Image 1 (cartoon, one colour):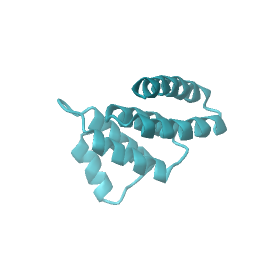
Image 2 (image 1 turned 120 degrees about the horizontal axis):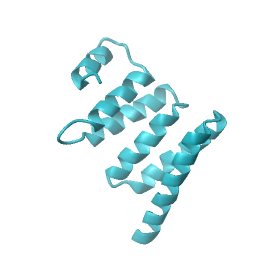
Image 3 (image 1 turned 180 degrees about the vertical axis):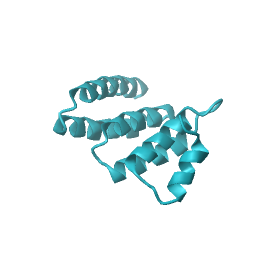
Image 4 (image 1 turned 90 degrees about the horizontal axis):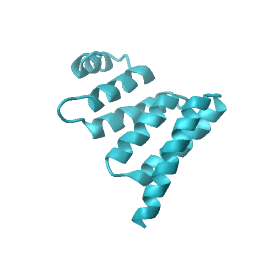
Length: 112
């Protein structure tokens, strides 16, 4: 996997794309020893702004928001992602997001 700095150089050269933003988010999440959740979320939001049909970005952003302690925001992203996955016939992504959404709803019920 390319380093964060290598990917940022591409971004700074004006080669912005949904795939590059997804790669940057993934690199930030895999940063050792501490994942950079806020940077990952930023790049995933930019990814979805560039390509609102990028179903994997919805899944990753929802997990990132959940890991940041934002289950309500994560659930909203999942709801958008499920609609996107359904419209693009990506049934595997839809099922995965539905399962995660169900878990988040249970978590939210417990906290209430």
